[in-house]
Image (cartoon, rainbow, N blue to C red; front, side, top):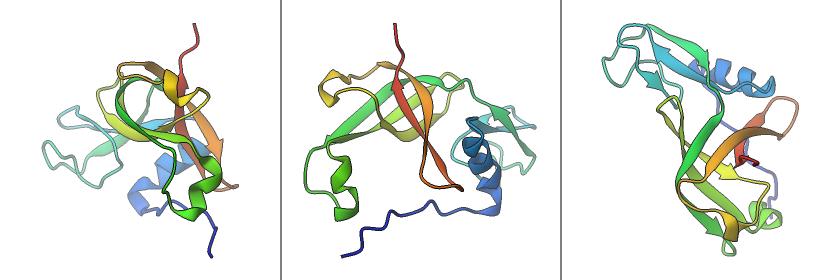
Length: 136
């Protein structure tokens, strides 16, 4: 049985995102033509189709839009993580990210919960942006 963790698949247009994560910085794209903020990394703006995109640092805060917690019946590579919660988080910059919620009990997670980014090291190349409840 293969218990090796899958690694993110990178593309030339997502390289800067992963570099930012490795440095503890959450980056999103911004279209220089229509000023649309964009996540996930793309080659073209989904609003105006411009390729004139750059990167901005997101504040790393948002609110849970929706979530689901896995307690069982997951691929064996993720058994040691059970239970874990996957969520869509609406960032203050107006983009939505799929992520994991960490540093709290699954039963304490709720929609509209305020969360902040924290980076979890997979290996020397990849640090994943997860979110945890904002303290206080």
